Image (cartoon, rainbow, N blue to C red):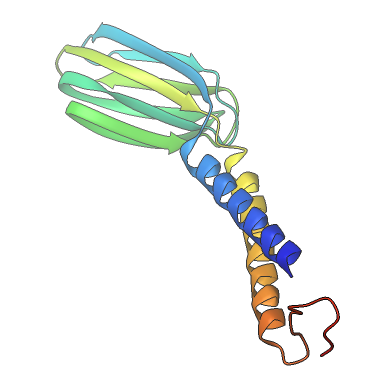
Amino acid sequence: MRKVLVLSIIFILVGLIGIALGTIYVPLIYQQSHSLTIGDKDVISYKLPASSGDEVIAKGFTTNPITILLISGIKVDGEWEVNGTFSVSSIAKFSHTYITLEGGNFPVNATFTVVVYNTSFRLPLISFSLFIEIIGIILLGYNIALARSKGYRSRKGKNKRL
């Protein structure tokens, strides 16, 4: 009975640690800061080393309105009109991802940071951890049921019978 209890506690702890790692820790692929001036009706693009499923986050400040496009392959994954302080994020659908900044009717001074996170291992890790957690809870329930059953009694002495 004690072995089942210890095993269930180990399973529950491993599951909790896996869930915590899956939600908190995400490996950084790319981070780059830029300070630039965009002319009126001008376009500037940056290629990002992102693949399918990676999270792209752009944060920064602009003096006038601009349009930010996140383009994966030939598809636009996100389009945002920003002015002043901004923070936008999207999931890249394909490889060959670009972030494009389009100026408006006035010249724009912009500073921004682009960060790319690899999130492709997050879902399998959390799923596996939840599976381990469920096994631990089932073992804990089995241990409780075994302790409460009428056919099981602990012996206090070596020669005592049930």
